[in-house]
Image 1 (cartoon, rainbow, N blue to C red):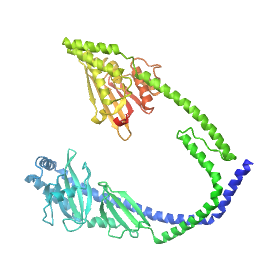
Image 2 (cartoon, rainbow, N blue to C red):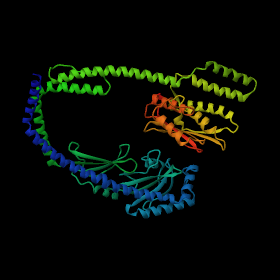
Image 3 (cartoon, rainbow, N blue to C red):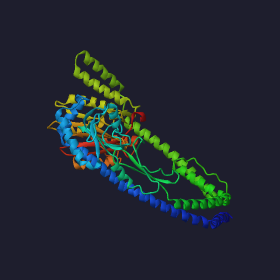
Length: 566
């Protein structure tokens, strides 16, 4: 009986397909029309994104190469830089002015076909330092100059171009803005004003479709350039967008779809709409009972996949789908029980492991005794003993605070400095340590007590056995803000690790052999590796490389956790 019910539903659903030949024909027509429209769009896309973009790229490359010629005279650029920095707004000396005139004449000869209207150099406050107008006698004011360089975006590293319809020359111009730098720092802008017609003719060669319009927009969505033809209809048009190679500008090409393609598309859409409406009316009452439990079952399965194990399927029929729903409910119940048990067990195990690895015997008596010795040393004027006791006291205070699992990098570095102060009091020549951290890294958060044990391991097993030469250590860190990772490097010039011992240590670190075969120097590294994986995840951890009689480099990756995420 159940089999007959489900077969009846399937048979009725298949009968419904006999009313759809007209729908199939319309779909074929619509597909053909869509193919023609897509071919036109792809043709326009190819011409715009490959040909036109390449032409504009070449156009701008020529401008950039020409502007770059200003650096061929380094002495001139350096003097101009000093003039801008020391005497802003004042005309440079005769040598600089003369050399700039030579540069302008050379640039004018290289770009003669582009019909240059003017060239001048401005600082970022709008002061003019040298100008060149082959056909005009113009004086630039500071307000106009500020508006001229406004399209350049901080930090003023990349050149850009704009098009002005109402210029001081009485005609549309293309303006190229090129930042001039000294030691990588922009200090002025080279402005080249050219006739807009050559650029417009270059662009218009690619405007071939009906009512096509090409526009260029700035990164601030301001219109820079627009063709003279009428704007295409917004309802029956195609739009192509590409990024131009300079200044973050964007080019858009809009054009109308051919009228005969629109007619066939509307006709096909009408037939499809009619067929779909008829199918909906006839099939709704039939398909509801068939599809509702299937959709619900799929939805509940997705909930299970996302971790919601308490979901259940409602059973409203007695066919095979209801049987599947019953089996699904039983499966979900078992999964929920199993996951709940395993999750609780895993959390308890991780919590106990983390606390066992991080916490240490709280040496309150020793801490108070160190404070007492420090005070006695200060009274008896023994500063070195006081410094040692104070540093050791700070280390114990840091260690006994087991409630903090994450600390800021600067706190961990302070802990390392206290340790190194004590170590260097033990050694006659001491160990030179250099720490290189960017200010932004100092405020990031890392698991507590993972850096000082590494430094201690390097000192005890790498640097102290070194008999000759200076003992050196370097600590550095780098942050990858895109990948959200923080990487520490601890490098020493100690005795290193032989190849066999290094391979065993790497094997232990990569296979979680925690304390099973670890002795001596490796137990501290395995402790840190375990804590990193438990706290941060298995994708983070320690990597080590070493060369006997040369030194050891230890690298460990951590998640990049900022202050507001800790």
